Image (cartoon, rainbow, N blue to C red; front, top):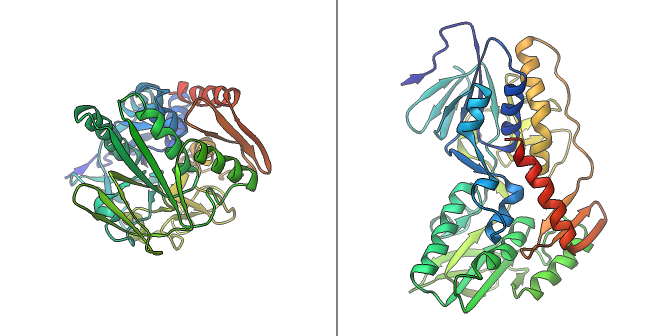
Length: 383
């Protein structure tokens, strides 16, 4: 069936995805509404975790409500329609979105902020047996189930494998033991696989050295320079096999490797980079379709080389709102200028955090965690 067929002269602004940029867009439309517009959000989940607080949630520092955005509440505030559905197709000829519940939604302006998923399709058994860190909502379902199983089965030993030694994998390796320590596990081992010979290769050397020492001191087993090429079921555990011949058994394997884009975006015909991410100009506007915008991890800016980091998704929210509004009003668009350096506060799972900006680094400290906590809670108070 076709939903919300536009029978009046109102323009449909459709937001696909519950990303950080769209949360800010909805808040701004609530404060500064625009007449003659139907605002629509399509997202599969009623709640979306804020990525900055996710390691703290895993470690047990936050409860569910404190770190999740409630889309029903935010949409009511913004006067927006909410469809809890998964987009599976984009018809650029008819300006329509196809959803998994067979809904077809028309749009005049479209904004896409659906994040990314770890690329694992090329690794045998990874799709079937490993748990991807994204989408985060699905990852958290597995995390909650793991905790429940440990309690129900009184599991005394547990081996966790994490594939991917970037910032996400490192934070996960440090926060998971903290989140499991009170469940009665006598022997908990966390193994971290990284294909390069150093963790967090996109960060300054000082960060890499400090965080490697933290991981080792916390008992995390590092497997650097190891490329995982298979995840296979064993008698009771999962087997991780590497190109070098190294094999290891784990109870669960979490996948936190380099990001990839959703297939429906790649198949739509919109201009993308080689990984399927939507190419946008400085206005966050598709380079091939002027009435489509993209922000967050799903977007690749053609004039700026940006890492897939939540800090940019947050900063893109306001300029995205401005340009959607300007597009409706027929005004010229305003470019978004990303910061050249940005502050990273990386939690270590024990009530401390490391701070880094460019080549400047402060080692883990409790005061830095308080700073990170204050920033994250301030962001969530908006919603």
